[in-house]
Length: 276
Image (tube, rainbow, N blue to C red):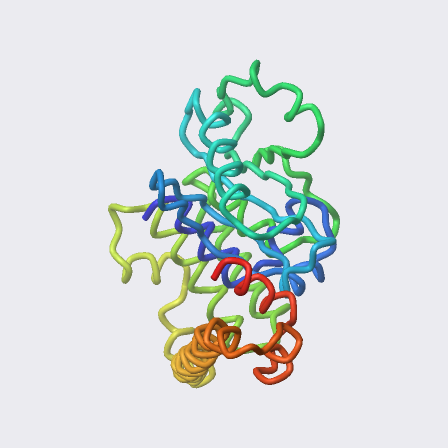
């Protein structure tokens, strides 16, 4: 499993961890949605994009790149992807860039042509081995740092995080997701071991047999299926409404009337009308 896939799963399930990494309040995650974005024209894929919910124009878009291998062209590629996305989107928000490296020595990207942008503070580089350890342990940040933990200390560190998850996370479903994420990271670090060996290494065999864990696993699956069905229905309804806008315009209805009739945001109706 690639490192960026692990980060995607981490930030998809626990977006507050990203905002912890950039020294923002964890509550900020509630105002964003996270996804991986492909700019189709050039087949660019951005590791992660945090887009403000409701397209709140006052909040910046965050572009994320995870880089665990040396790459001299990382900054040219990252900026090309970012600016192409900004050109193609209808969003007018400001933006910030975040690049995550395991260590500063991996950051060998050529910067001379982009030095003004990098010096402006618009782009932030995070080196996992330089993250401060505070007196209050952050389970999110420590889980990210597990990726760079030496193999000799990985099992001990992972067990500590699993215990923290069981102590600090009250939701059984969220707790299970976090523990499975920790397990995934350890599997990534020890590809020569099978899942059963990893479970024994982390002491998970007995935990996974408990009633609470099994119920959380079942509840999580059911919840996921229900959310998927609901999301599909909502997307279908919205798509139907958007398709109706050009027809209603052709009948002589104005933007305000259409927005009221379809219960849509008036700016969204204007955008469809403009591009229709």
